[in-house]
Image 1 (cartoon, chains in turn yellow, brown):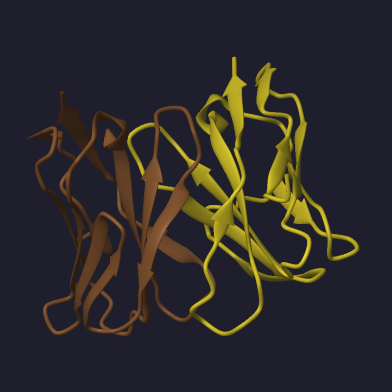
Image 2 (spheres, chains in turn blue, brown):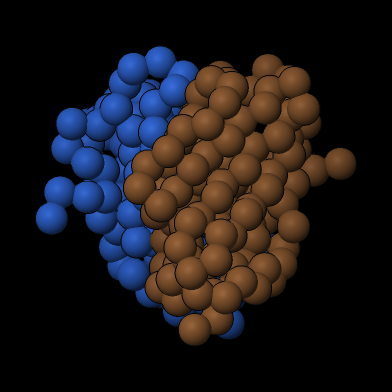
Length: 115
Length: 110
């Protein structure tokens, strides 16, 4: 399967704990995005990488959130001191280079529940 | 005002009918428009994209774009129960992030 993969698929944690999610994009895609989706809403943009450079961050991305893409391949999203409001589906998407009209393809998501 | 607006539904159509899903957007600088399908508990799956005014057809799906009215729609012909899902409209403005609507839930009745 050459699609976007995400791990873990589900994560249950207690409030105050740290969690880390991983995303492996489609191999030839150099752009990688993180979104968050809550029930009944569309995905909301969190951050974007082109290769290893983090080029854009949403104001939704508080200082408890950090994302990396160290070698321009896989990416990690870490949430420190989790809060119940962080419970959501965290989606990763990738796209090839090619201008503003590139199409984003989503991974299966990581569903986070903070107790 | 939300940047991308969709009627939440549910939109209920009988099997074999045409389902019409609508989306409006606020940023006149928007350049790219996407429709994603999302089954319950799953991630969004790309159905179609459209960049220019007019219609674009792909199998049973037709996307329609009217930039003057800031309106994009998705028609699904010969609707099947397997089309029952939430349909997300997404808009690209030249920044890398897409802005999504909240989605329209479609129910196709057998």
